[in-house]
Length: 156
Image (cartoon, rainbow, N blue to C red; front, side):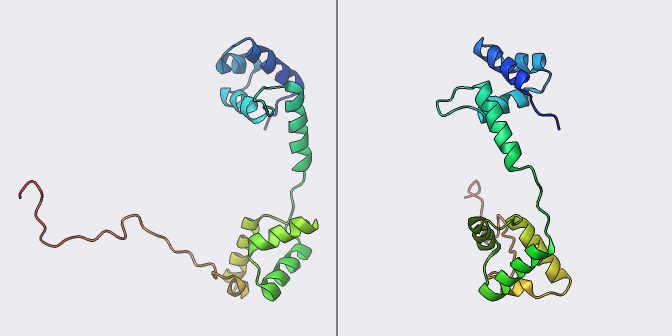
């Protein structure tokens, strides 16, 4: 995946300031029009103005914040298992607590995946969830009943 650099951001700024269209800017910079659109909307300041200096700063902050992928290691697994079994916390509560205490943790969805995998392998972790991983599919027309021997409005 290719990211915009500072030179491209200054080019976008100058061309946007000169009232050029996003498609013209994208063609000149060599990126898609969606990239220019996202860049202009994502990196605006509080007044709604685009600044390439601020945009680069925001991009650097996002890159620094999300630079490492967390893996579900043994310590994380034991922490999640302990919280589920002893306190019967939901994955949302586990993640919230871990983030507030500065404990590295994976996402809520990854914890749910771990619980489902444990259930498939004969484990009992799902029993500690309040809803026990129940999934009820609700159909759109489930509440509609049909009237027997009804007469169409055109035939009345």
